[in-house]
Length: 323
Length: 255
Image (cartoon, rainbow over all chains, first blue to last red; front, side, top):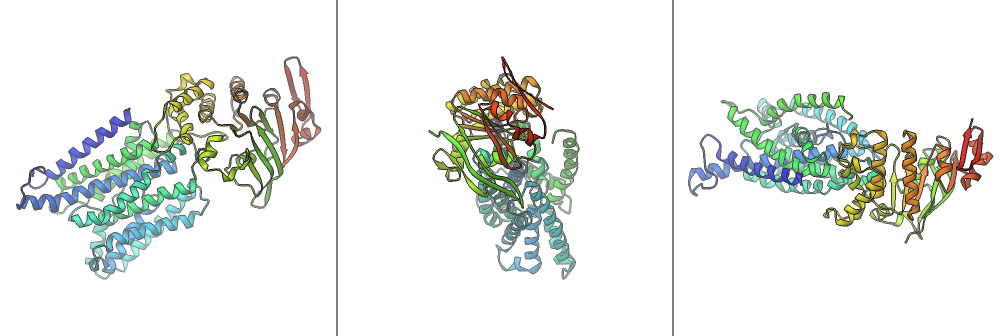
């Protein structure tokens, strides 16, 4: 089977790239033979490992979410950003940062992100209604995005001092720098649970290729499955955004590049996109570290710089094809 | 074994507009029934209600002895296959993959295609004469080829009953005849087919019975010969209908 080969290849690549990322840095370290009790051990386990782990997890979540939402909306331009999940998660985290709650408890920041993402789902649900068509889902996502963008600006606008403001702005840019294993432990369960929910929807997404009516008569309850997908995306992306800030366009670019490799099948695209997203972010994070000078470039800035033009390119291509 | 699909006294309103009023219809195994009537008569709505896509406001749909709504969605999907108008395909999938989607109701999510599934897919592709389309990409097919692939997807489910909404719309005469003959064969094989048709000649030629709707009401029902000659049908269509009996069958002229 071709898609099994693709999966195996991507998995091997991910392992190789991750080991390389652990070894790579100011000094080269052998991740498979770092003696305990040495500074090498500390650097490897407390600085590089959390960073690589987060890149793998967040990349997988974003790639998977993008693939799932594109299947659900049957639109190659969909992305966690579209339904407003990323922005709402960012708002939740920003509120926590601004109010100083982040310093009160270690779990406040991720909690804020997930509450925000949960609220976005609720909002989109209320705006698009119970019997919502997928178009009203997209429109509701746009409305949520615009409103939440204004709320984030409001928080920045009334920020008490420039330090609070710059902290928030830097956080919004998106990065894996200076994260600890504890950050990984807090966010990982929600990312995994959400991703598992999304992964169960593969067959529904396949059936949905023939339209919602056909999928329904093939034995799926569309309302139930829509909320499994959107809920899973909210939990996983909410947790991801709360540890990493906003890292855009991964969910758009990765499924788009990998889709032809799995014959455009939505179900097969899910796993492949998760692996692809993880590989992309590990590589991008290494790129960010290698080109940074005195001021470290933020990963979210780089992904947006590459993703934005790519988005335009896809729009121009899809306009001329049958979509 | 489920012997018939039956709608009893269906009422349905869209917002405040009545779409179906007191419509009853029965579809037995082994027969092909044509659903005819002018645009907006409620044909598609009736088909959607029979397929379980839309619950009626009043009345009930029976599948065999039990009510359709009491069946699990998977069981319903194994017994009834619905072919929507225009049958969209959203991704450039390989034709064989599209036909395999018809096997979804027969396997749990962790199961891959078994031997029986492969056999059903092969049979469906053979029945619809889609063998040479197997490796093609569905979004690159012509209208006639695509209609056959979508029909193959329906056959792959091996359902008792097929509900097809204008399966020959926008097809050339050859493909119209081909699709109708395929549906006819399904009925001959013991399945039941309910098909929405606009072409009265096809209805006369391929259907065992016709049911005519107008403004949400059933205006007449019976053998094609009687229904097509019924003045109520001509009134519903606002045309004059002449039925001509030729040695090779029934022909319909309208003006």
